[in-house]
Image 1 (cartoon, rainbow, N blue to C red):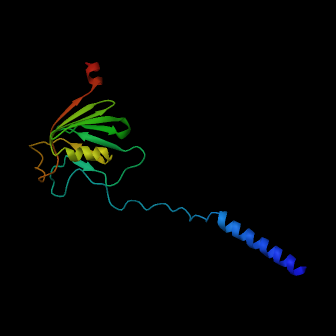
Image 2 (cartoon, rainbow, N blue to C red):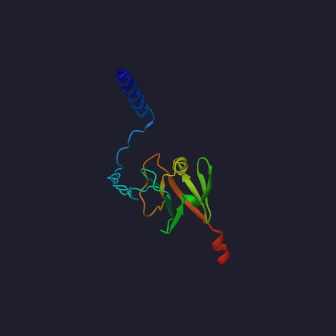
Length: 158
């Protein structure tokens, strides 16, 4: 009888261990804070100081990504993707960006790259070309030759 009790308790112990192995989760490794991005954000100027209509984020930024649009006079309009209502692209040269406060109409060349960057929420900056200050960009790069900005708030203030 002793062998039966020993086998029963051993079998129960094996069953218990098997159930524990089967249904318990493995422990997760300790959370480690990710290393800060070693690469600096892209700036509005290239090394050779050529004009860039589009500056993109290298990776998606946070919970509330933002971008800004700079006109020929240097005025900056900040926009959050949360307030971006949409855009209307008329290939090859017109792109209208609608936010809750403004409608930005961009006219230029190679704007399909700007439209694709908007789709991926990668736009950091859009800049209008200034012929007296900016050097021509490389072939195939977007160029914003004209920027029209409409705001219902400016009309109401007049």
